[in-house]
Structure formats: C-alpha cells, structure tokens
Image 1 (cartoon, rainbow, N blue to C red):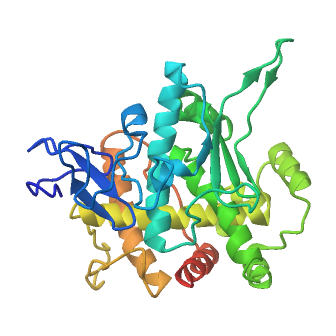
Image 2 (image 1 turned 90 degrees about the vertical axis):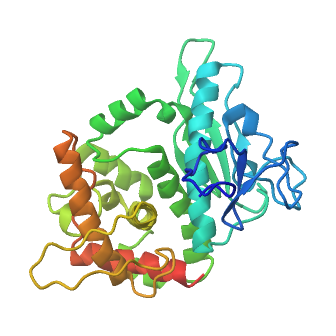
Length: 340
C-alpha cells in the first residue's frame, strides 16, 4: 500500500500512480516509504544510486558506503551500459534479483552485508558473449562457482530465453528461476557443507560425489531417465544430486513466493473435494512450521491458475506434479531453511 494515500502499489513501483508520491523500499524493514523532495526517506537514508540508471526502487542501508542497495551491492560485474540493449538486459536482471533478495531476507537466510571474493561470499556477474579477433565467440555460461553466480545477459531477452527453453524441452525458463536455482548452489556450500549436513542431504538427494561433468554429459546425450516424474521436480533435477537439490530449492521458493503473492491479492482457492475442510490463509508462507501446510494451500492455487491459463489460451501456469518423493525433498529444503 502507498504510505501516503493507502492505494495499491506494486513491488517495482517507485511512484504511486494515484497520489504521485515518490516511493522507495526498505528491504530489511520490509517497508515501502515515501520520499521527501530531496529523495530522502524519513529515516534519513537515501536511494540506491542505480535508481536513475535501471529503475532500482530500493533504499541504501544506513551503514552503506557504496551508494548501492543491498541487492545491487552484490553485483560485481555488469555489461557495457553504453549499449542500450545490454543496459536493458542488466535492468531486467536486477529487477529479478531484487525479488530473490527479498525472499532471502524474508527467509532469514545468512547473507553477507558486502561481497568479498576472498571468502566465497555471494556475488553476481552479468556478462555477455565475447567475439574474439578471429571471429570465434567466447560463450558465457550461466552457473555458480565459489559464491559467484554468473548469468549470461542474453537470458534477459525473452525471445532468446524462449528459444533455449524450447531447445532444452523445459516447462519453465525465467530470470527469477535462474536466480533461485543458482543461489541454491551457493547455499548448498554454506548450509550443507558448512553445517555438516552432507549425510542427511545425500540420503535425500543422492551422492553428490558422483562425477558432475560426466553426469551432465550423459544427461544431455541420453535425456532424463524414463520415470523421472516420480522422484524429481524437473527432468534436469535427475542429472546429478547437486541439480536435484538446486531445482527443489528453486521450486520451494516458487511455492512460497507464489502463495505470498496470491494472498496479497485476496486469492485463497479451496480444494474442490467433497467434504474437504476450508483452508485458512497462512499467516506467513515464509515461516510455516510444517511443510505439508504449504502443499495443501499450494495445490488448490495451482489448479486454479492452470484453469485460468487454459481459459486464456496459455500453457499451464504450473506443469508439475508433486509426488510423495518430491514432497519429502521439499520437506528437506523447508526444514533446512527454517533452521536458519
């Protein structure tokens, strides 16, 4: 809600379209605030310096010395902003990353105040393919290594991303999905390896010591195992235990973010089952004691959204089936995050 007039505003808004108040978001307080004419918040904090460049509507933290908000601060490399197409890609990537950071903060997951390459802290590089003098193209591969998440900025081009999605036979391929997936690899190192959770993780997702490169080559050469839908949330998840963990982690983020958004707009679909009890809206999807509560609220929402998409001539909003095995994996992610 707009803090000045009370009308509805949205996550990326920097101005209320009803009263024209200039707005900014304070992430740690989870509060949208009105700005004074000199673009200062009531607390005295100022806007992220990327506000004019890419439309970032977040405030800097009070102890910041970089001029950047908590989300933008963790981007350590950006594309050539003199190229308007690349600048547009950067803007769309940061917009998706702010949603990621919003969730990390809401979950209470550990997050360094500033990126530090020497400690393996979380950082992001948004890079583009490079054409060498000999005409060969040096491809940028999206992925994670030692805390650094690299995203090829072409993923911000809807047409290219859809081309990749079709080629890889993926039901989903979105910017926020990339971020949620890749950050899972970072938290695997922090929460699984760093907190001596390897045995429990292997019991759920399989032995991560299997050769990763060989596993991916086999996956792309032969495709997923025929029965993958019974145990994996996506076909890519069955390529290797690391990818199973990351895909399940991303899916958990999809669920919680989806429920929060639905509730914000007054949506709380009920199961269409005779005699089923009415579901009472969860107080906070980010902090639920039992993951089964999330599932019992999530499934009716996805059924309704799939029906709505079909009515509008689109493919299913949620083309997934959550089997008992997948539910157990989601429970592992839920318990891991809740323990932080």
